[in-house]
Image 1 (cartoon, rainbow, N blue to C red):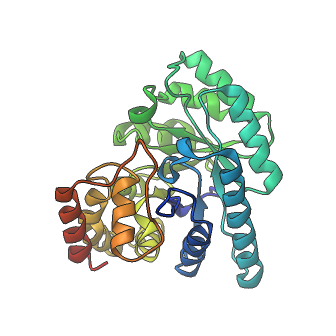
Image 2 (image 1 turned 90 degrees about the vertical axis):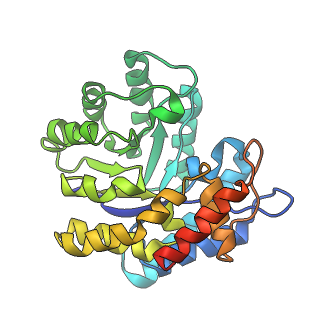
Length: 301
């Protein structure tokens, strides 16, 4: 069984009105996630606005999440994996970021496909070969909609044979590709985690043998997303379906005008630490606000 299994929150980076990082807000969000029973945390990913963060800001956030999670684990006797974003379209930087999160005590690194460069399959393979040598468990992040390159299943099969590659965050949006990954890779390597990158595909993916979700919605509703995911993983599909359809309006609304813009608006609306966005991201438009507010009400959140 995979070491990464269940609901993992792709954490936002809360910010003050002046655009500075709200570190205490981030700490509050980490504690909220832990208190609500989340299975794992994934800071410094896409949802965390990482492209606009400075390295010293990232390091302070890593220190906060690692210290709070380790204290929680010690007092509650439950492991909560921390998978920290460490990707770059510069392989040398990706290696350096993986070395950093390894040194700072992360359980794994999330490494995205190199973006903008649009490397060949061989270039993508060698990128992951380089980061795999750092010695920290690596989760491959496949999201062609943001990177311009899909990691095909044959390519992922090659990457999965590298040392320290422990799973994939599959955000291709293609359930057929996800099933191919399960059939061709996970069937041979049961400890290889296949996690959805789309909240709305969590239940379908688990139903065909996946391991869970790296969720945006769980920033606001960690208890509900965790309950749905684990019900599905434990075979209680009736319960999982009810929760899926209860949350479905917000699964859609949380991306109605982009990410993390939409989830940040929802969190601000619910008086949670979220705050401002950094350019080039801006607040959602007025019609999107109405959609988000209605979805929260319809879902009982």
